[in-house]
Figure (tube, rainbow over the protein chains, first blue to last red):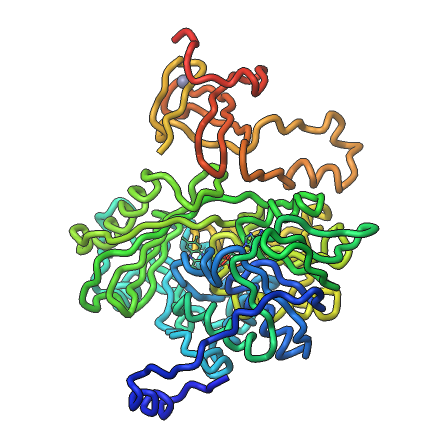
Amino acid sequence: MQRYSGFGLLRHAMSHHENWQRVWRNPKPKKQYDVIIVGGGGHGLATAYYLAKVHNITNVAVIEKGYLGGGNTARNTTIVRSNYLWDESALLYEHAMKLWEGLSQDLNYNVMFSQRGVLNLGHTLQDMRDIERRVNANRLNGIDSVALDTQGVQEIVPIMDCTTSRRYPILGASWQPRAGVARHDAVAWGYARAADALGVDLIQQCEVTDILTEDGAATGVMTKEYGAIKGDRIGCVVAGNSGVLAKMAGFRLPIESHPLQALVSEPIRPILDTVVMSNQVHGYISQSDKGDLVIGAGIDGYNGYGQRGSYSTIEHTLQAIVELFPIFSRVRMNRQWGGIVDTTPDACPIISDTPVENLFFNCGWGTGGFKATPGSGHVFAQTLAKGKASELAKPFSMFRFHTGALVDEHGAAGVAH
Amino acid sequence: MFRIYCPYCGELREEEEFHPKGPAHLARPADPDNCTDEQWGDFLYFRDNPRGLHNELWVHALGCRKFFNVTRDTQTYLIKGSYRLGESPDQARTSGDQA
Ligand SMILES: Cc1cc2nc3c(=O)[nH]c(=O)nc-3n(C[C@H](O)[C@H](O)[C@H](O)COP(=O)(O)OP(=O)(O)OC[C@H]3O[C@@H](n4cnc5c(N)ncnc54)[C@H](O)[C@@H]3O)c2cc1C
Ligand SMILES: [Zn+2]
């Protein structure tokens, strides 16, 4: 792998940038792998990278039915934070946050991680009580978190309407200074390039149509394009399609797939240098480096796999944004799209063994898994390497929905992001 | 944007008048006290979540406020039709009820 550097940029400028190396190979699949990862989104690619880097397992394939990072990874609003309420989830997301902080260096790829801070607004007395509680829980877990009053919020975002005459007045917020945003595509590409360099085969345009099993144990996958590919262990990281993959293997998951939409405005001059989210009015917004406002919606309530949702959901989201930022009322929207998110009953992920031996799932990240990409890959790599979950991943077994040990994060994850 | 047929009002109406309420025909175990944790967990949380035809519960929230079922394709979003509680999916229809 050619390392990227400022000097390299200069050198390639001499040859008009015509001699850059391909970022990854495009191999044909081998007959057999130690680990097969189904799904080439950020989480699957990160898993492959850490398998190779941390566990020295390099005979690995990532099988992706479309193109790398073309699923939710390419469709999300890129909010990264770790201020979750419960110990189990806070530790997992904070693990990811620590990896984010060194990620560009580690991958030798600029993921444009920008710690510009995230505000979670409170509009009611109960919101503020919940915020206080969550902020205190965060601090006990060593996570940076501050509770702000109205004036504190107004100082950070002067253009937001913090007057008390609003229908949903802003009473305060939780503020995580280390939180922020990252470039979603770069995360997928950075992990893909680094995994490829360590010997991982990235197989694109290859759809898994069945999970092969013998005596209740998974032995490989059937693909549309290349037939059977054998694997000692299989990890499914297919987000919204997890239910479909589980069905292939003969079991069900506590997951439903819903459309989640987002939209961006025309590019405007820099005006918003942080991230603002509100559970109560249900919207979230940041400004990309290109200048467009990046705006997220809530899920559409019905099940869907079609990567699109209903217009009324978008309208509702923009009402919320204009309520917070009357100044944006005449900004024009440029593009709108949907992804398919895999929601669980407790708004926490599933990182788990399954009823089928040698078959593991990493899913259920729902509306908020982008922020966890490095941590998710890191812990799932250990699950696949050792055959059992690490301490961080253990609480997220799918079997918690039988024992009742749910990790209820609806408070911290109540709004889609 | 869906146009959903309410089998009680007998009309096709805008999606915004309705709320989706999850999968239809989820039978509550007859004797919950004697369910294993696994059976009870399966009932509460585990779902078919199909990509394709899906029978689902909707409520005509801003209309007659009655619950009914809809058969809809979760990939194409095409709606096959609606049927009343107590009816079966093969009775799904998009017209014909008395208003
Ligand atoms: C609109 C929107 C906004 C969001 N905003 C945020 C946010 O601000 N912050 C945040 O933290 N999270 C956010 N999320 C959630 C986040 O995007 C996801 O949790 C995360 O990206 C999931 O990553 P993944 O790699 O697991 O899934 P994906 O990127 O979806 O990757 C799964 C891959 O599996 C492939 N696949 C599926 N079936 C098969 C098959 N049969 N064979 C082979 N390959 C298959 C798919 O093609 C896909 O590429 C948002 C999501 C959406 C849709
Ligand atoms: Zn009606």
